[in-house]
Image (cartoon, rainbow, N blue to C red; front, side, top):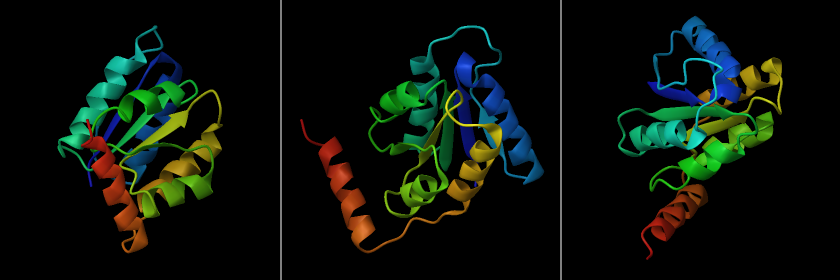
Length: 147
């Protein structure tokens, strides 16, 4: 599994911590920035990550901004992306198992490092379930095709 990461300035420090955790798990990733805490525009980075996930250049993406709200909004504008803003472990697991989320979004100013690490770990370990969940995810895809 290869991941793609991105953050704005508010999420930079948490994104760097996530990279350290991923290194410890030997999980490969690509970082699309930002590379500092200098102010930048989250839509640019969120869109770049979402497009790579949608084009299936990578398996999953992780986005981080101050609240997670802005990154969620921009990522979910890209057809094929199911970005889930998660602030707890139950939502992290359910977003993968039930909603087949392919982008995890975190709010760096909302959750602490310990919880963020647990959310990432659980989200990466969860496996999308079939059955009624797959049927519902297909319906989400159908909405993307409507004019």
